Amino acid sequence: MPNSSATNDFVTTLDVEVPEEGKWQEVAQGIFWIRMPLPFDLNHINLYLLKDGDAFTLIDTGIGTSATKDCWESLIERYNIKLKQVIVTHMHPDHIGLAGWLTERFQVPLLMTYAEYFTARAIVAGGQGADNWQDKVYLQRAGFDEEYIEKNTQSKNGIRKVVSPIPLSYFRLQHDSEVKIGDDTWKVMVGRGHSPEHACLYCESRQILISGDHVLPQISPNIGVYNTEPEGNTLKLYLETLPQFLTLPQNTLVLPSHKQPIYGLHNRVNELLAHHHEHLENLLDFCQEPRNLVQCLPILFKRELNEHNMFFAVAECLSHLNYLMYENKIKRTLENKQYRYQAIIT
Ligand SMILES: [Zn+2]
Image 1 (tube, rainbow, N blue to C red):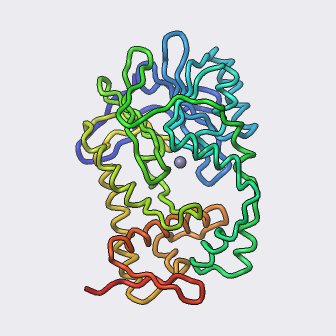
Image 2 (image 1 turned 180 degrees about the vertical axis):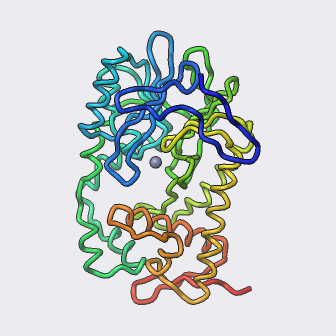
Image 3 (image 1 turned 45 degrees about the vertical axis):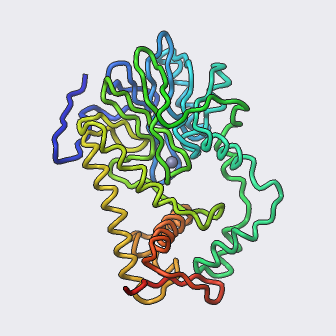
């Protein structure tokens, strides 16, 4: 069994090997960590199999590509895996991608929160022919030119290619509700901001938190405002639902969806809170002069942004600008179809 190396001052990585493709790694008794590939800069997702009687409860499923299916096939064969139920923390394609494929194969239920389940179904269903003029306005307001807007608002149906058909019925998880897995009881803790109603799972008797993408080590979960709800205040939702994890013990074992399991929950939560407040302060400084969103991007992102990253960077920047606007720290005006943001001097 791995050692705990918790201290009060740091975030420390659990002392176990990262599982190889097609193999698992036991991180606590009856809890097996597996990794699936992702075709992005962030090249993997962590999934967890929890012993549940003579079968397993699975947490998250991997993106719906043939590479992930191949990984699943070899895992299922190597360990003779049978699933009892599938829990999906939230609707992003790396988490829900193979939920349909797996629940159908094992004829088992899918457990999700209401907002995540229905958002996933809506996104996979696509625009149904509705005009995308609002997607164009979203990018126009941010300060992009016509050429960029034309190129980036063509419907690609990208999501559907990497999410297998979502089951037509589900079991609803709610904040504070409990899920029995084997002899353990796991409490659902909902986090918002990264996605609408993200489920984290906490086992009090074992002090283990399955944190999904809500609390991640090393990288900060993307907090975005997207074209479906451009006036949203997702950063406020995130900053409001993150401190609840400070009420759990500091030496809780945290099992995240990316990077490695950690100890030092309070430190990590405080780092994430500080990270966003630092971004907010830097933006506010930069907006002493009126700026559009595109001009603000280098304040949050020091690295070069490719097309895939740009989509998330714009959304992340807008969540911070909207937050400052709702806090009455900046005012927003519309000039030449673009929003200009300027700090309010008090
Ligand atoms: Zn996510």
